[in-house]
Length: 254
Image (cartoon, rainbow, N blue to C red):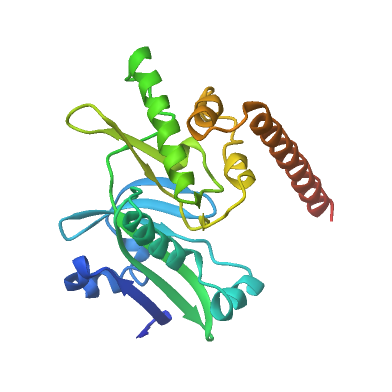
């Protein structure tokens, strides 16, 4: 634990970058003056491409949690930043690609968790929906390779609950083979035995149209069963969204 002007700062840095500990540890206190090359997202969380020394790193700054979650992240379960860091290492050990983890940092106020930061190496891979540069033939090959990647992921009992095109990156090797990376991994689950959670993770409507059919063929699952699970999940998501909208309207009226 490091004491900084922002309060207490907890830092864990991958040994590969340990010589840059002072530069990394200074990021939370110098956040507003960082050398930002690009901002990928700035909603609840902010994801930016930053330059530190001669490195291009992706920095994710998680939104400050509500009080009850600060208590939870202090005393009960790891915060999102540390989970992202640990899960990245675990994925790489299991043979699943993800941008290499550099470090995580957590700031504390009054003894409670405040803000988390996760740093990874930058990858030039594209998001799954960025396929305009591919021919129709190559796009089909990409989607087939993606189905095989998904099957491999699930055989290793890794489930990504936010399995959407923005969280899946793709690239090509020198011989033209398609490769994939996972990002936004702090909510991953490992070791689930039931088939249903894995199939439910494919309910995102913007995934490739033939993914479920190809996936079931690879895994040996009944397609009609899988389609039923997907429809149930989508109905559940729709009800959840309507409830959020109603609660939002209610708050505005109050």
